[in-house]
Image (cartoon, each protein chain N blue to C red):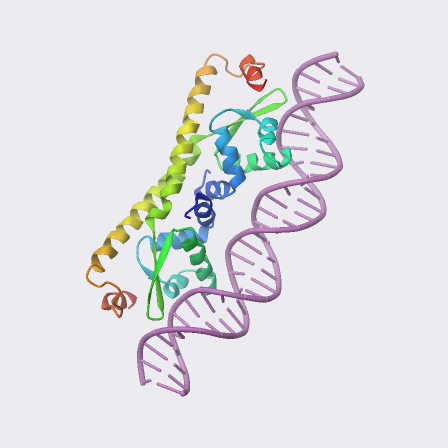
Length: 117
Length: 117
DNA sequence: ACTAACCGTTAGTCAACACTTACCGTATGG
DNA sequence: CCATACGGTAAGTGTTGACTAACGGTTAGT
């Protein structure tokens, strides 16, 4: 659970990011949350479901109200993924800068042809 | 450009993450990239377009081949966004732990009712 | 020139998704 | 109790998005 895939799909939706932003500052019941947007409570509820399934949000029931709040640990895996991708890409960038240092825009370079064999 | 929205939408697709992972290790032409998956070169090309529009990837043309590579700076804004959300959510978590310390699962708490007014 | 390899683009298809409307269960308050 | 507020669920709709197939454009090799 809390798979990187679910987290990214959840965050890809702008409205869900906005919801998460609000829940990152306060603990908020659904109705109050829905008032902030021009969509139905139903839509907000569905967004909350996606966020909760992704492990980004949790809720506590108090009477008829459901108080939602952000779950910071839910972002841990994604942060790790980004760090890994970031550093790998940086390695490639540095390596290419080195090899291209004296090549410029000249083509027909033999290094790449070798890499393709 | 390189808006957080474009980056997240680009990364939300599993295939694109896989492509990005390959491009994070090496500089790869499109055809070689397409061989790694069971989809058409056209699909891969479209994925690359999305990744490039998001600023996650760049390419250089050498003959008939287009060599793509990851662009690490493209992840900077997203990392910043995550750090911000993470820390905000942590603040809320700490605050709630404090106030709930002596409350446990008791309901009808007056603090929340005040916050709703 | 001719051919073949490489790649992007287009139109069309099918599934996923964000949303609304209607409904149902539960809990508080008169 | 009965009415009301709160919130999740189900069904239906319009749009987005990932994919294939077909095409066109450019470069390399003979």
